[in-house]
Length: 190
Image (cartoon, rainbow, N blue to C red):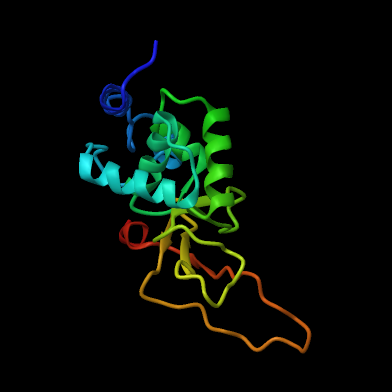
């Protein structure tokens, strides 16, 4: 069966809607809350935001599919960088291998960037626009992060910049990762 462009777009939106009906942001057991806490996001679908996300995917050279769009939306709607496990928990209808393959593709095409916060789990964050991450000085998404040692969440510090350090002759920086560790505001109150 071959669907017309309009019918395929409608099927795509129905798939996204049905998939988001199963999103679990921060509910369930204590372990699930620790690993699957995306914040106060609701997972509601906004067609205009989906169009912009799909436009970014096309710019990055990513072939659009319902599953890839769903994974990219989960990253975009999170209020902070998220791990593959958190995405898996939030998207109960998508299997781990599809998430892993999509994340690898997103990183290689510059749609998302990774953050290594020392927790042993790489975090993913949607880039402001698709680009190469091979130039630390020209990377618009290069900013420090804060990792809470109590709740395990990692937060972006967008208003701060990573200082440029002088390197010895012959050394060339390809990327930089600055992570500050401590207690977040929510954990400090407890």
